[in-house]
Image 1 (cartoon, rainbow, N blue to C red):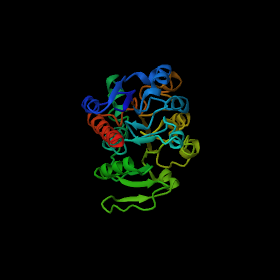
Image 2: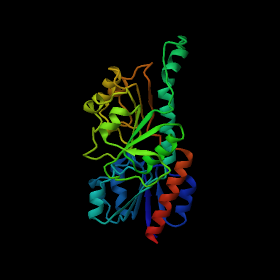
Image 3: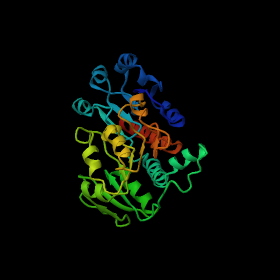
Image 4: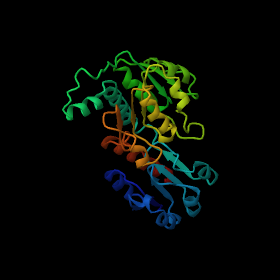
Length: 307
Protein backbone atom coordinates (compact mmCIF):
# COMPACT_ATOMS: atom_id res chain seq x y z
CA UNK A 1 0.00 0.00 0.00
CA UNK A 2 1.49 3.41 -1.00
CA UNK A 3 2.41 5.73 1.85
CA UNK A 4 1.19 9.34 1.70
CA UNK A 5 2.45 12.26 3.80
CA UNK A 6 0.24 15.35 4.28
CA UNK A 7 1.97 18.40 5.74
CA UNK A 8 -0.83 21.01 5.78
CA UNK A 9 -4.56 21.12 6.44
CA UNK A 10 -6.96 19.11 4.29
CA UNK A 11 -10.73 18.62 4.40
CA UNK A 12 -11.57 15.97 7.01
CA UNK A 13 -13.95 13.90 4.88
CA UNK A 14 -11.45 13.91 1.99
CA UNK A 15 -8.81 12.70 4.46
CA UNK A 16 -11.06 9.89 5.64
CA UNK A 17 -11.60 8.78 2.04
CA UNK A 18 -7.85 8.83 1.45
CA UNK A 19 -7.27 6.76 4.57
CA UNK A 20 -9.35 3.94 3.08
CA UNK A 21 -6.91 3.52 0.19
CA UNK A 22 -3.48 4.52 1.47
CA UNK A 23 -1.18 4.43 4.48
CA UNK A 24 -1.54 8.06 5.62
CA UNK A 25 0.47 10.26 7.99
CA UNK A 26 -1.24 13.62 8.50
CA UNK A 27 0.46 16.47 10.37
CA UNK A 28 -0.92 19.85 9.35
CA UNK A 29 1.97 21.67 11.07
CA UNK A 30 4.81 19.58 9.66
CA UNK A 31 5.60 22.27 7.08
CA UNK A 32 7.14 24.32 9.91
CA UNK A 33 9.60 21.60 10.98
CA UNK A 34 12.00 21.25 8.06
CA UNK A 35 14.36 18.86 9.86
CA UNK A 36 11.53 16.49 10.73
CA UNK A 37 10.18 16.70 7.18
CA UNK A 38 13.61 15.85 5.75
CA UNK A 39 13.80 12.78 7.96
CA UNK A 40 10.29 11.55 7.18
CA UNK A 41 10.06 12.20 3.44
CA UNK A 42 12.30 9.30 2.40
CA UNK A 43 9.64 6.75 3.39
CA UNK A 44 6.77 8.15 1.31
CA UNK A 45 5.42 7.53 -2.18
CA UNK A 46 3.16 10.59 -2.20
CA UNK A 47 3.19 14.06 -0.66
CA UNK A 48 0.27 16.48 -0.28
CA UNK A 49 1.00 20.15 0.54
CA UNK A 50 -0.38 23.66 0.38
CA UNK A 51 1.78 26.75 -0.12
CA UNK A 52 3.74 26.76 3.14
CA UNK A 53 5.65 23.52 2.61
CA UNK A 54 8.88 24.32 0.77
CA UNK A 55 9.40 21.30 -1.47
CA UNK A 56 12.89 22.28 -2.59
CA UNK A 57 15.75 20.20 -3.96
CA UNK A 58 17.12 19.63 -0.44
CA UNK A 59 13.86 17.97 0.59
CA UNK A 60 13.44 16.17 -2.72
CA UNK A 61 16.90 14.62 -2.59
CA UNK A 62 15.79 12.84 0.59
CA UNK A 63 12.56 11.64 -1.05
CA UNK A 64 13.89 8.36 -2.42
CA UNK A 65 10.46 6.83 -3.11
CA UNK A 66 8.45 9.94 -4.00
CA UNK A 67 6.35 9.65 -7.17
CA UNK A 68 3.50 12.14 -6.69
CA UNK A 69 3.10 15.63 -5.17
CA UNK A 70 -0.42 16.96 -4.77
CA UNK A 71 -0.78 20.71 -4.32
CA UNK A 72 -3.92 21.78 -2.43
CA UNK A 73 -4.09 25.00 -4.44
CA UNK A 74 -2.79 26.40 -7.69
CA UNK A 75 0.61 28.09 -7.36
CA UNK A 76 3.70 25.90 -7.66
CA UNK A 77 6.42 28.35 -6.65
CA UNK A 78 7.02 26.43 -3.40
CA UNK A 79 7.80 23.25 -5.37
CA UNK A 80 10.97 22.67 -7.40
CA UNK A 81 9.08 21.54 -10.48
CA UNK A 82 12.22 21.27 -12.61
CA UNK A 83 13.79 18.81 -10.18
CA UNK A 84 10.52 16.85 -10.10
CA UNK A 85 10.41 16.72 -13.89
CA UNK A 86 13.96 15.39 -14.05
CA UNK A 87 13.20 12.75 -11.40
CA UNK A 88 9.84 11.80 -12.94
CA UNK A 89 7.85 12.98 -9.91
CA UNK A 90 4.33 13.96 -10.95
CA UNK A 91 3.23 17.37 -9.63
CA UNK A 92 -0.54 17.92 -9.53
CA UNK A 93 -2.07 21.33 -8.70
CA UNK A 94 -5.79 21.70 -8.00
CA UNK A 95 -6.32 23.86 -11.06
CA UNK A 96 -9.58 25.81 -11.05
CA UNK A 97 -10.89 24.40 -7.77
CA UNK A 98 -10.64 27.72 -5.88
CA UNK A 99 -11.52 30.01 -8.79
CA UNK A 100 -14.99 30.89 -7.47
CA UNK A 101 -13.60 31.84 -4.04
CA UNK A 102 -10.91 34.07 -5.54
CA UNK A 103 -13.36 35.70 -7.94
CA UNK A 104 -15.70 36.52 -5.07
CA UNK A 105 -12.80 38.05 -3.16
CA UNK A 106 -11.83 40.23 -6.13
CA UNK A 107 -15.39 41.41 -6.71
CA UNK A 108 -16.06 42.15 -3.03
CA UNK A 109 -12.73 43.98 -2.68
CA UNK A 110 -13.45 45.99 -5.83
CA UNK A 111 -16.83 47.01 -4.48
CA UNK A 112 -15.46 47.90 -1.05
CA UNK A 113 -12.49 49.93 -2.28
CA UNK A 114 -14.22 51.83 -5.07
CA UNK A 115 -16.88 52.80 -2.49
CA UNK A 116 -14.03 53.62 -0.05
CA UNK A 117 -15.68 51.52 2.66
CA UNK A 118 -12.43 51.14 4.69
CA UNK A 119 -12.10 54.94 4.89
CA UNK A 120 -15.77 55.47 5.75
CA UNK A 121 -15.55 52.76 8.40
CA UNK A 122 -12.43 54.20 9.99
CA UNK A 123 -13.86 57.71 10.10
CA UNK A 124 -17.24 56.61 11.43
CA UNK A 125 -15.88 54.53 14.33
CA UNK A 126 -13.72 57.54 15.30
CA UNK A 127 -16.86 59.67 15.47
CA UNK A 128 -15.97 61.87 12.50
CA UNK A 129 -19.12 61.10 10.43
CA UNK A 130 -17.33 61.57 7.04
CA UNK A 131 -20.51 61.56 4.96
CA UNK A 132 -19.46 64.44 2.72
CA UNK A 133 -15.70 64.65 3.21
CA UNK A 134 -14.97 61.32 1.47
CA UNK A 135 -16.15 60.85 -2.12
CA UNK A 136 -16.95 57.45 -3.60
CA UNK A 137 -17.99 56.34 -7.07
CA UNK A 138 -20.02 53.59 -8.72
CA UNK A 139 -18.45 50.44 -10.12
CA UNK A 140 -20.86 50.26 -13.06
CA UNK A 141 -19.20 50.86 -16.46
CA UNK A 142 -15.73 51.19 -14.97
CA UNK A 143 -12.77 49.34 -16.52
CA UNK A 144 -11.34 46.26 -14.84
CA UNK A 145 -7.91 45.23 -16.11
CA UNK A 146 -7.11 41.55 -15.50
CA UNK A 147 -3.42 40.65 -15.72
CA UNK A 148 -3.24 36.91 -16.27
CA UNK A 149 -6.23 35.36 -18.02
CA UNK A 150 -6.18 31.74 -16.93
CA UNK A 151 -8.92 29.84 -15.11
CA UNK A 152 -9.16 32.32 -12.22
CA UNK A 153 -8.82 35.41 -14.41
CA UNK A 154 -11.69 34.19 -16.58
CA UNK A 155 -13.88 33.52 -13.55
CA UNK A 156 -13.13 37.04 -12.26
CA UNK A 157 -14.20 38.41 -15.66
CA UNK A 158 -17.41 36.37 -15.61
CA UNK A 159 -18.37 37.63 -12.16
CA UNK A 160 -17.34 41.22 -12.85
CA UNK A 161 -19.31 41.51 -16.08
CA UNK A 162 -22.46 40.83 -14.07
CA UNK A 163 -21.67 43.96 -12.05
CA UNK A 164 -21.44 46.18 -15.12
CA UNK A 165 -17.66 46.35 -15.43
CA UNK A 166 -15.91 46.57 -18.78
CA UNK A 167 -13.09 44.04 -18.97
CA UNK A 168 -9.59 44.34 -20.40
CA UNK A 169 -7.33 41.28 -20.17
CA UNK A 170 -3.61 40.78 -20.66
CA UNK A 171 -2.04 37.37 -21.05
CA UNK A 172 0.82 36.69 -23.48
CA UNK A 173 -0.24 33.03 -23.69
CA UNK A 174 -3.84 33.78 -24.70
CA UNK A 175 -4.16 34.68 -28.37
CA UNK A 176 -7.95 34.87 -28.60
CA UNK A 177 -11.04 34.51 -26.45
CA UNK A 178 -13.31 31.84 -27.83
CA UNK A 179 -16.13 32.23 -25.32
CA UNK A 180 -18.50 34.67 -27.01
CA UNK A 181 -20.56 34.96 -23.81
CA UNK A 182 -17.66 36.73 -22.07
CA UNK A 183 -17.26 40.26 -23.41
CA UNK A 184 -13.54 40.77 -22.80
CA UNK A 185 -11.01 42.71 -24.84
CA UNK A 186 -7.50 41.28 -25.04
CA UNK A 187 -5.20 44.21 -24.36
CA UNK A 188 -1.61 45.20 -23.87
CA UNK A 189 -0.23 45.93 -20.42
CA UNK A 190 0.08 49.57 -21.41
CA UNK A 191 -3.61 49.77 -22.29
CA UNK A 192 -4.56 48.16 -18.97
CA UNK A 193 -2.39 50.61 -17.05
CA UNK A 194 -3.79 53.60 -18.95
CA UNK A 195 -7.51 52.73 -18.94
CA UNK A 196 -8.24 50.64 -15.87
CA UNK A 197 -10.10 51.85 -12.80
CA UNK A 198 -9.37 48.50 -11.12
CA UNK A 199 -6.45 46.14 -11.80
CA UNK A 200 -6.53 42.53 -10.62
CA UNK A 201 -3.45 40.31 -10.82
CA UNK A 202 -3.61 36.58 -11.55
CA UNK A 203 -0.10 35.42 -12.43
CA UNK A 204 2.27 32.72 -11.29
CA UNK A 205 5.48 33.89 -9.63
CA UNK A 206 8.39 33.38 -12.02
CA UNK A 207 11.65 35.17 -12.78
CA UNK A 208 9.70 37.00 -15.48
CA UNK A 209 6.85 38.16 -13.23
CA UNK A 210 8.77 39.04 -10.05
CA UNK A 211 8.33 42.77 -9.34
CA UNK A 212 6.48 43.06 -12.64
CA UNK A 213 4.25 45.75 -11.09
CA UNK A 214 6.66 48.47 -10.02
CA UNK A 215 7.30 52.21 -10.06
CA UNK A 216 7.41 52.23 -13.85
CA UNK A 217 4.06 50.43 -14.04
CA UNK A 218 2.40 52.82 -11.58
CA UNK A 219 3.68 55.82 -13.54
CA UNK A 220 1.57 54.67 -16.52
CA UNK A 221 -1.68 54.45 -14.55
CA UNK A 222 -3.92 57.33 -15.57
CA UNK A 223 -7.18 56.70 -13.68
CA UNK A 224 -5.87 56.25 -10.13
CA UNK A 225 -6.89 52.59 -10.14
CA UNK A 226 -7.46 50.16 -7.31
CA UNK A 227 -4.88 47.35 -7.24
CA UNK A 228 -5.92 43.84 -6.16
CA UNK A 229 -3.40 41.03 -5.77
CA UNK A 230 -4.51 37.48 -5.00
CA UNK A 231 -1.70 35.68 -6.85
CA UNK A 232 1.78 36.04 -5.29
CA UNK A 233 3.13 38.94 -3.25
CA UNK A 234 6.44 39.38 -5.04
CA UNK A 235 4.72 40.19 -8.33
CA UNK A 236 4.19 43.69 -6.90
CA UNK A 237 7.02 45.77 -5.52
CA UNK A 238 5.36 46.56 -2.19
CA UNK A 239 7.42 49.69 -1.49
CA UNK A 240 6.50 51.09 -4.89
CA UNK A 241 2.83 50.28 -4.23
CA UNK A 242 2.76 52.18 -0.92
CA UNK A 243 4.58 55.11 -2.54
CA UNK A 244 2.07 55.14 -5.42
CA UNK A 245 -0.79 55.26 -2.93
CA UNK A 246 0.68 58.15 -0.95
CA UNK A 247 1.38 60.04 -4.17
CA UNK A 248 -2.28 59.58 -5.19
CA UNK A 249 -1.28 57.55 -8.28
CA UNK A 250 -3.57 54.73 -7.13
CA UNK A 251 -6.69 55.14 -5.02
CA UNK A 252 -6.55 51.94 -3.01
CA UNK A 253 -5.35 48.36 -2.84
CA UNK A 254 -6.33 44.90 -1.62
CA UNK A 255 -3.50 42.50 -0.88
CA UNK A 256 -4.15 38.89 0.02
CA UNK A 257 -0.55 37.86 -0.69
CA UNK A 258 2.76 39.36 0.38
CA UNK A 259 6.43 39.02 -0.37
CA UNK A 260 6.95 37.74 3.19
CA UNK A 261 4.21 35.74 4.84
CA UNK A 262 3.22 36.33 7.58
CA UNK A 263 3.84 40.03 6.95
CA UNK A 264 6.54 41.70 9.02
CA UNK A 265 6.67 45.08 10.74
CA UNK A 266 8.73 46.52 7.89
CA UNK A 267 5.58 46.31 5.78
CA UNK A 268 2.65 46.70 8.17
CA UNK A 269 4.22 49.72 9.89
CA UNK A 270 3.55 51.56 6.61
CA UNK A 271 -0.19 50.83 6.79
CA UNK A 272 -2.03 53.57 8.65
CA UNK A 273 -5.66 53.88 9.80
CA UNK A 274 -7.71 55.73 7.24
CA UNK A 275 -5.95 54.26 4.20
CA UNK A 276 -8.24 52.85 1.50
CA UNK A 277 -6.85 49.34 1.70
CA UNK A 278 -7.67 45.76 2.63
CA UNK A 279 -5.05 43.33 3.90
CA UNK A 280 -5.90 39.64 4.35
CA UNK A 281 -3.74 36.60 5.26
CA UNK A 282 -3.68 34.66 1.96
CA UNK A 283 -7.29 33.53 2.25
CA UNK A 284 -8.92 34.58 -1.03
CA UNK A 285 -8.94 31.00 -2.31
CA UNK A 286 -9.65 29.38 1.05
CA UNK A 287 -13.32 28.95 1.85
CA UNK A 288 -15.24 26.01 3.29
CA UNK A 289 -16.48 25.12 -0.18
CA UNK A 290 -13.17 25.54 -2.00
CA UNK A 291 -11.35 23.48 0.64
CA UNK A 292 -13.74 20.61 -0.07
CA UNK A 293 -13.30 20.93 -3.85
CA UNK A 294 -9.52 21.25 -3.67
CA UNK A 295 -9.15 18.35 -1.24
CA UNK A 296 -11.52 16.05 -3.13
CA UNK A 297 -9.78 16.86 -6.41
CA UNK A 298 -6.30 15.97 -5.12
CA UNK A 299 -7.62 12.82 -3.41
CA UNK A 300 -9.09 11.70 -6.74
CA UNK A 301 -5.90 12.52 -8.65
CA UNK A 302 -3.58 10.71 -6.24
CA UNK A 303 -5.95 7.72 -6.17
CA UNK A 304 -6.06 7.56 -9.97
CA UNK A 305 -2.28 7.91 -10.14
CA UNK A 306 -1.46 5.00 -7.85
CA UNK A 307 -4.21 2.79 -9.26
